[in-house]
Amino acid sequence: MSDALNPVTENDLNAYADGQMAADDAARVEAWLAAHPEDAARVAAWQSQNAAIRDMFAPYGRTHPDDTARLKTPSRQPLINRAPMRAAAAVVLFALGTATGLALPSLLGSPATATPIFEQASDAYTIYAREVRHPVEVWAGEKDHLVAWLGKRLGEKIVAPDLASAGYTLVGGRLVPVDGVAGALLMYEDKSGKRLTLLLGRTARKTETAFQFASNGAVETLYWMDNGLAYAVSGEVSREALRAVADLCYRQFQPA
Image (cartoon, rainbow, N blue to C red):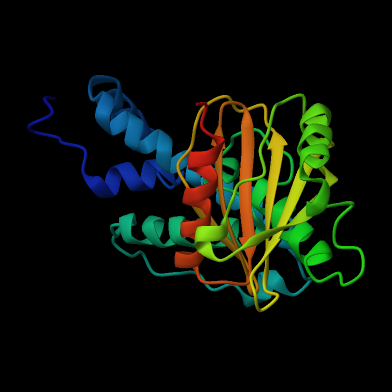
């Protein structure tokens, strides 16, 4: 029978993706998918999302001896368009990823990675920016020694950006771990004593990325990747102020 006489509908595709289709109907859909690669790709994406959602919530699964008694035999209902439900699920996945520091692709099957750079930067800010007596290991008065020392440990020539035009001066810096290897933390403050930190660390990712924001309570972080290094500026300031500082840093880190 031709596709025109017996077409596969959107509801059929959704039911197939959810495993809610009789064997004969499933065979008809599979034949359709073999001839329609765009629909096949859509179904594969839906199945991947379904698997990711099941895996994510599997640890919370619970059973109870009385569960079967609570079940009722449902009346047969017409299949509905599940696309809005999938859209809502995608929003849930994204929100959970943001809250836990995981990017959505990792929930959909990409390999797990180390703690994201923005979490490491936020933690470093929280620990050191609020320290009164020992916020840094090397103070700004030894700036040349500071950048030479940190650069040697990173295996990369670095600079301590001049942030005077944004109202911040260098306090100093320290060596910190970034993804288990040596990283650098530079600290700045304004005339009121409000501080910002700049985290630099080596990353396995060689591709450049645009500026991206992340929040951890009152701490905002703006981070990016460039030339094998990860950069992250953190502080309890507005995103607009953070972007202005990051722009200054980015320009000064570019090769002359």
